[in-house]
Length: 110
Image (cartoon, rainbow, N blue to C red; front, side):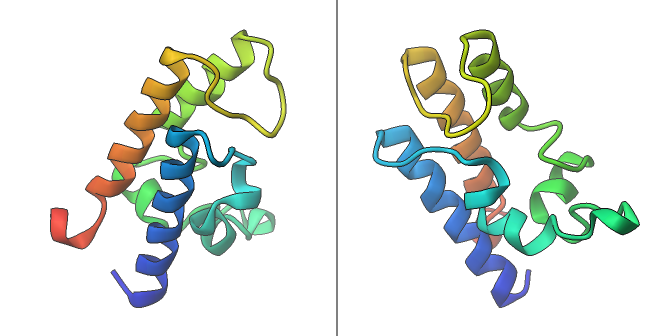
């Protein structure tokens, strides 16, 4: 993993640490350092190419990760659009799962 990707991954981890502890919220790709780095070439349909999340999940747009569960849970509870935040124990648990997944992508965890 190159230094720029590692920095973006660490930023995404920090985002989810804040979401889990209630000091920040999810604005989707707008406040995700990895998305800001890798989810920017929709015209070629090569979305998320090079993103460690997409590589680990073998999908794009965070498909195949806890983020899908997070988004679905927010939606079924009336939180459509952004920002999204922890609002009960289940949403906190899902956010923690996403945080744990991101941390598992750190090179020292391989």
